[in-house]
Image (cartoon, rainbow, N blue to C red; front, side, top):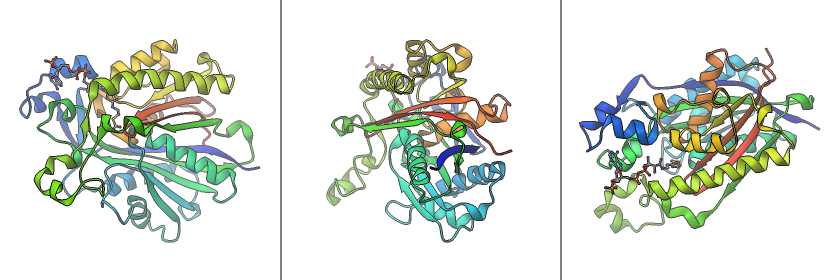
Length: 332
Ligand code: ACO
């Protein structure tokens, strides 16, 4: 049987930076409030003509180069995004594949908001284990600035742009393999976090009179409580199901939405500070890109070593959530 292994990681953050002080000129807020309530200090913002796929391509090029796998051997590209280049078609994954000159691969997007990277990891794992694909490029890429309402202080302080990518490939060696991925969703909480307009769920008249509905809207405080409760349970479940103790985790990489959520979940799991990867201060919440961007940070800092065990967890619009136990298994 083929197993699926995480071979490499890459990421990209746009050069423009939006600080908390910049935001105080746009909405009624303060650096102190944002820092205390979220842990965020700044976020990266893409240029107007920089597409989600462009950021995805920059991250993907790094991941492919670091994987030791020839670009031509990639047989599938999956992109997790809620801010695609185009609303309905073509998918951002096909644009990424085109820009990488991968012209006959399977390519598609998935929409699972901030849980997107865990979802695409599970998809890559399933395709590889079934024998249908050998080398899958997964990309979490978001231009959230394009769907953020910069008059709403409850949301605009949170989000940033960026991309992260990984190459997942087949292996016979079980030691290298992704151990487990959990994914779940509960649509009864759909209204906590949504972009209400722009799809077939909203009549055209509403689109014309309520243009703001194309931006993200969030019931932040309710989302916060469900996030802490759900994530703590989900992470406990995946550790227990695989008979793995917290001490065996080298790097706990949670979705970077809010430092207080990360801290609450980390504390509930009795994680030591140096096990928990926190990048929310410099990138804000980049949704489907946040986990691979965080893994890339520890990789580039030299902290992520071959054979180390990553625990991922994420939570987002849908509501969706998920977790994964992933050894880092580079070929070189
Ligand atoms: N600056 C100053 N004051 C603010 C701001 C701001 N930017 N935003 C809200 N406030 C005010 C509110 O108006 C409220 O004032 P009031 O008490 O006078 O009514 C007060 O601060 C408290 O507001 P809360 O919403 O209760 O603040 P909270 O502590 O919950 O923090 C936040 C808000 C940061 C949004 C938090 O709830 C959060 O992080 N929620 C979870 C987000 C998340 O994880 N989302 C899922 C992933 S995102 C995705 O999938 C795309």
